[in-house]
Image (cartoon, rainbow, N blue to C red; front, side):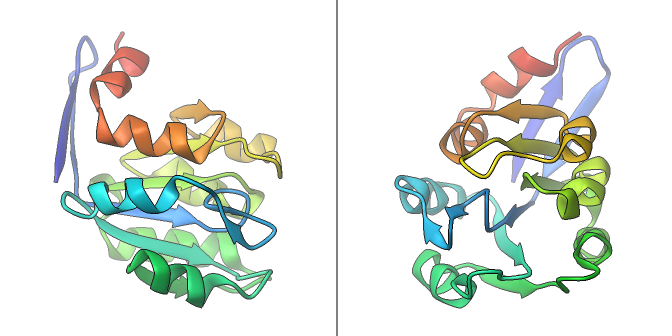
Length: 157
């Protein structure tokens, strides 16, 4: 669990789940980005980690196995709703959502904390507008969670 109190906003986040989009977020063109595995290892001591993906490049199973996290497949046609349904099943208010795509927008809008990642694939403007924080890489996103004082600095009033 990660507990974060946001000064001036009367918000205390009790975060237990980390929902990660795969392509464009953890991986580019189906290849896991350098530095992700080590950071996920640190975060697994505090959070239950899930990868949510339509698995465009077919690498989801292998990446989930490498990271030793749960893989949850979503529909390529209705992935946004599938991701939202999974988030709600896991208690949205206690979850962190990290993504970049249009199919991440509902998950980002409804999570207790949401982080938009802008990797090589870019990001959907709708997803960006739904997020609490935007960062330039998955490494930056995961580092925010490892050192939550950065989140406080970004979200305080």
